[in-house]
Image 1 (cartoon, one colour):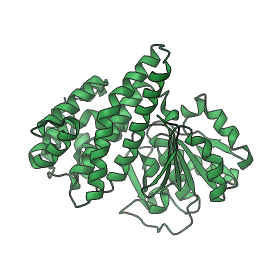
Image 2 (tube, one colour):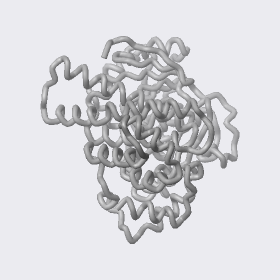
Image 3 (tube, rainbow, N blue to C red):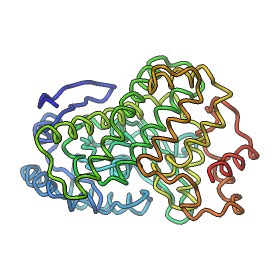
Length: 394
């Protein structure tokens, strides 16, 4: 991949390319930020390049909040808000995957708003979002949620694990520095799970009810990028884990593949403003009941959910199938491709791998039926259907 850094806006200003992270100080200056809080998770904070990033922000009085792990919960947000206030920050740098991005946006929301975070739940708010929201600059380190280009933050209740969505266009980061070099050390399992998250966003956005040809076009190209790059990224990660030292050509191919997936991830998050579907409702229930990683939950549920949807949208399935297999003649070939991809990158093929009891699906169905994603699914989903989809996932 060439070292050129490109700019595009959808609508966030994105600077994409190897080395984009080195523009961080200049972007903070342009935004008028004088005292920055870095928000990240425990694992990212231990990566070899992270101290260099912190040092580069010394002139901005940078402090780091790294109290994020797993699926983000309210207590992490509260701790982050306390760190924000104690530091006297006026801007946020969000570094990491979906969890740090969501916590960073929630901290920004609560920096100047009173009450509880869930007072601002989308569709159920009891308080208006009417106070300033501090600027965020985002540096993604995974290619999955695309939260860096999203208008919402998804945070779970500490006790019930129920996910709540807070939405406002002001939650969009002002700038995204999308640097594929930050993904080069991502382990194979995380690469696979986050990649399936991106793929699920793209597929469900394309299938979602409604009219949005802009999102449809972005979704199809994003699916193409996943087909071209996800398996390669997982393979490269496994080879690095085995101790292989890459020559220049192999290193360049790895960087290009990571860049492809980073773009696919952002495209998925942009496209799903059109909507999502039943896969996400099933996955949200798995995260709520079993605290399953969101991308892994999507990856396990996607084949069963697409088998459920196929008859309701055969033409859309065929269009997607032809993206991943140009000679495809029917939508079933997309489903077959998803299954093959999942198996090739190590995604578990059964809910049993998560310890889910096939005879105890009631809690999952109870959460899934209440989830806000499946109403835009191309096929209506009843309680009985949810039982069938979960059973099929075994």
